[in-house]
Image (cartoon, rainbow, N blue to C red; front, side, top):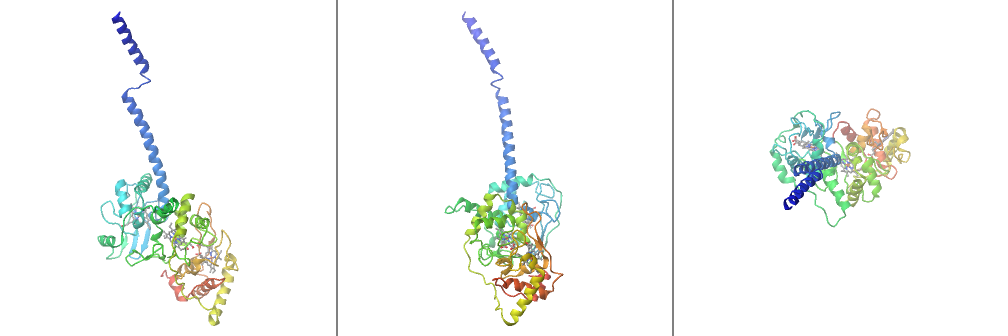
Length: 431
Ligand code: HEC
Ligand code: HEC
Ligand code: HEC
C-alpha cells in the first residue's frame, strides 16, 4: 500500500509537473524572454535618447557650422571665416573614414567638454567648446546617439586655411592654459529651476557668448560675458545683451523676448544676419518651456554700465540741412515699408523708430542692412518673410550716409552721424 501511495504521488507529481510545465517555463526560456524585454526596453531608451539628442543638437545649432551651403546636413565643409583664417568644418556624420563613425561616447565627450579631438590634438576654439563645456554628460551622450543615427555621408574636409603661426596646433596648449576653464554648468540653488535651465541653455548649448562678446586678437572672450562685440571675421556687431542701450531685454515682458527668440520678429526688434540664422536654424525649435526659461534668464541679466552711443549731433545749421536731405531719401525709398513715422508694420516691416538695432554705437549692422537688404528669419510660423531690397546699386555712398544718419536721429532716435567713409568701408566688407 505504502509503495502504491508513493508511486501515485510520484506519478501525480510528474503529471502535475507536466501540466505546470508550460506555465512555469524553464529557467533558460525565462532568461530568453527577459532578455527580449530587456532588448525592447533598451531599444526604447535608445530611441528616446536619440529623440532628446535631436532636440539638443538643434538647440546647440551644430548644423549651422557643420553643413556646407547646399550640402548634406552635418557632413562639414562649411567655411567659417575668423581673424586667423578660414576654418573648413569637419564631417560629424557617422561615416567611419571621413566622419565620427569610429568615435566612442567618451571621445565625443572629450571633444565637447575638453576641446580635444579623438587623436588627442587640441581643437581650435572656433568650435565653441568653451561654451559647450557646460553641457552635462547625459546631454553629450544624447547628442552623440543622435549624430550616430544619421545617414553616413562620405565627404572629406579639405584642410582649414589658417595663417602662420596660428596654424601650429601645439600653440593651443598655451591658449587653453590662459583662456579655457572647463566645467559642467553648476546649478545655482538660490535661483529657480526655470532660471537655471535658461542659464544652462544660454551659457552652454546656445553658445550665445560665442558671438555676443568682445574678443582679443587671439580669439578669446574678453570683458563682460554677453557684453557685445564685433564678430570676428565678419562685419556684424552682436549687441550687448546686458546694456539697455543695446539689446538688454531686462525691461521687456517675457512674451516679447520669447517671440523675438522663436520667430525673429517682435514689435521692438527683428533678428537679422547671423542672428536670423540662429533663430531659423535653432531657437525656433525650442520647446515653449525652454524658450520661456531662456527669456527668464536673459531678462535677469544684471545691467552693465551704459555704453557710449557716440556723439549724437545737434540738428542745427549744416547738420540740419543734411538731416532734411536724408529725410527726402527716406520718403522716396524707405517710407512705403517703414512708415512715415518709422513705425513699420507689425509682422512685416520692422519699426525703425525706437529700434535699438538702428542706433547702436557701432553702425555697421544698419549700414549693411541698407546696402544688402535682407529677410527676417524663415521659421515655421513665417515661412515666407517680408524682405527688404538691397540699396547698394540704387544709392551712392553719400546718400546711404545721409539716410542712415537720418534714421538714427529721426522720431526720437539718437545716434552718431554716418560718414561716406564708413559706408565705403562697409561696401568693401571692412569693419
Ligand atoms: C561656430 C561653429 C561651430 C559650431 C556651432 C559647432 N562646431 Fe563643431 N567644430 C567647428 C570647427 C571649426 C571645428 C574644427 C576645429 C579644429 O579644427 O580644431 C569643429 C570640430 C568639431 C568636432 C571634432 C571633429 C574632428 O573630426 O576632430 C566635433 C566632434 C564637433 N565639432 C561637434 C560639434 C557638435 C556636436 C556641435 C553642436 C553641439 C558643434 N560641433 C557645433 C565649428 C563649430
Ligand atoms: C553667430 C553669432 C550669434 C550667435 C551664436 C547669437 N547671436 Fe544674437 N545676435 C547676433 C548678431 C550679429 C546680432 C545683431 C543683429 C540683430 O539685431 O539681429 C544679434 C542680436 C541679438 C539680439 C537683439 C536683437 C535686436 O535686434 O534687438 C538678441 C536679444 C540676441 N541676439 C540674443 C541671442 C541669444 C539669446 C543667443 C543664444 C541663444 C544669441 N543671440 C546667439 C549674433 C549672434
Ligand atoms: C520693401 C520694403 C522695404 C523697403 C523699401 C525698405 N525696407 Fe528696410 N527693412 C525691410 C524689412 C522686411 C526688414 C527686415 C529685414 C531683415 O531682417 O533683414 C528691414 C530692415 C531694415 C533695417 C534693419 C533693422 C534692424 O532692426 O536691424 C534697416 C536699418 C532698414 N531696414 C532701413 C531701411 C532704409 C534706410 C530703407 C530705404 C533706403 C529701407 N529700409 C527700405 C523692408 C523694407
